[in-house]
Image 1: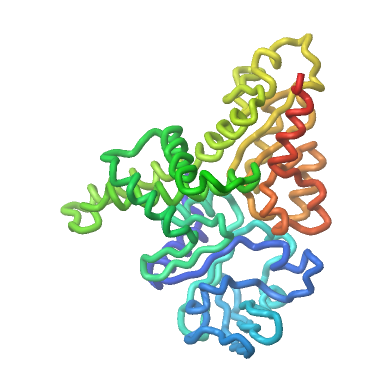
Image 2 (image 1 turned 135 degrees about the horizontal axis):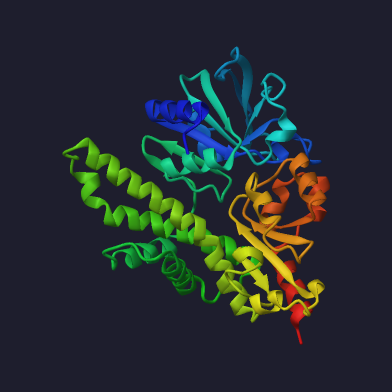
Length: 390
């Protein structure tokens, strides 16, 4: 698929400037909660992208910056550190009122801030899954914590315990090639279990932990296996392009299957009956069919006792793909790690009888009045257990 002009411009600017801060736009960022807080929230570790010095607790500080968006006149916004009282946070205000975007429709989109100078920022919003994935894959970003900081090649996006980092480094040192995606997921769970075997996790938290740990393990494995390419210059441009394409394709392949593998293991640990992949009309392959493909194919089996579950890391655009994957099942469930979706899209999903299954920690990133439509992973498991408990 050919890159959009916007994505091409962003990649060129990001490579040239070498520093940026990006985050998913949440419901809180656009005022769709009752938090009564104004402006886009900035993660505290990103202070050096916006300020020369870090904010000091007990004091507020601010500065005016000029925002540059391709195709529009620059406008002024205000970057603020709130340090007085109980507050300790950074925000960007006077942004949405001056920008060309409808803020309510930006929930779940990726916004990127690139510092041109101390007072000037180039800003992009990526609103399709293809653009977001191409951008995050290009810079090897993980946004499970909602945001990432890129600074001269260094990426800050996930905080791991020292013990987990040590286990990951030891595990990847034993490999001389990349494992298959299913094996990668299994290795990740083993690493996580070794570190946290005495700590209880809910289904919602463990899914996030596994995916987060797998990303960090894969990233460490890349560093380990590509060490020679990082220290020695490429002799030919063609070889450089070939290696770069191999890296990007492997990243996409792993990321595309990671969540499915972990959901499969989680369901098995709860002894749920399911088929993965599923099989429905016309040889279609839904991600998960419960209780089984055989039950789905048996027309005497009650349709009301069948469950469909799609599994997609992001679902801003791709949620429609599940609509015709199992015709016998009217209400479809979709498990996703998507961090917020606009009210319009959530209404469209409800109209099409799609129920989102979202890990509980991400519920606060969705518009408040729509959160009662979301299911947790634990609620879905309980729903399946009650249906098939006999």
